[in-house]
Image (tube, rainbow, N blue to C red; front, side, top):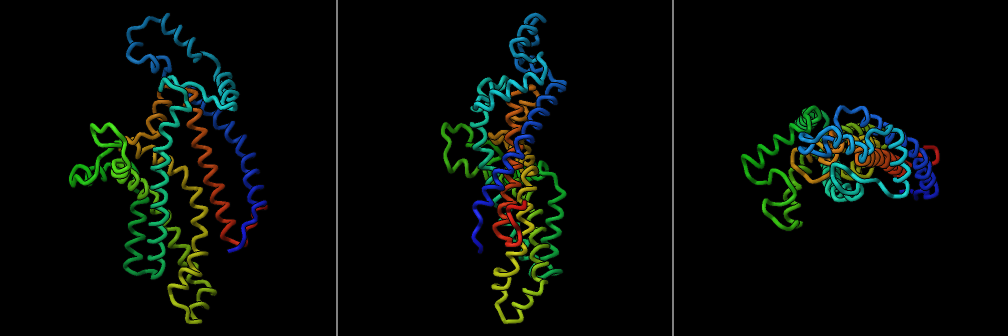
Length: 330
């Protein structure tokens, strides 16, 4: 493998970081604009049931304290200038600082997405390679048919089916949550057992894309002249597959990694909701329905940054593996 030009990689990261600034500004501004146009009343969401018996004067005073009557552009600018210094504001719906509210939940969402994505990539690569070895075989038809079926299945439907089968009927896995009911401490064993279903469902929702891409890429690589020449020289099929076809066949998968990040985030929100996983899904829903400007803007920024980071990672991996790609031209 060639030596990666670290200077070019650093320049690419710096360029993408500069380009990310206007994107994040536009996204956060849009989040404030959409929240301002929302039909939900942030004052009633903040007061809860107490708002039902409150008079208009009390509601107006609370509205003034929350500052929801100010133009959204003013609120956006105030939040932005504070966020630059590290202050993401205070969440009205969570009743705590935004950074603290996200920090408590982000670790669990990151764990869920990391495990699910790793399983999807590894298992998808394995199935794709097995299917590509013998095109048109029973294994190939079975893998591709299953991949296309799962590709069309909504992730929440897969999640509900998994709960019905493994939790309700078989009773082998917990239906949701982070720990067992009544448990006072979070243990690694409990987290692992409760992680299996949500991570498995999220992995299954991403699996078809990697399987089909690997199958197509490896299948095309096996038909190329260099691979045919390697076979003609008497090299073992395993050496031909792993040493020649797999490396070039996996190149399209690298671009897929970045493009699947938005779908991964969306799927994680649905999976967390179904399995009551204590990630950022509940915070996102509450921030949207309560028109919690600071929390909504921070979560939107976080999701956008994750997508941009995924695209950057895919480009770096592509430049690392493919010698024809020049990082300083990306």
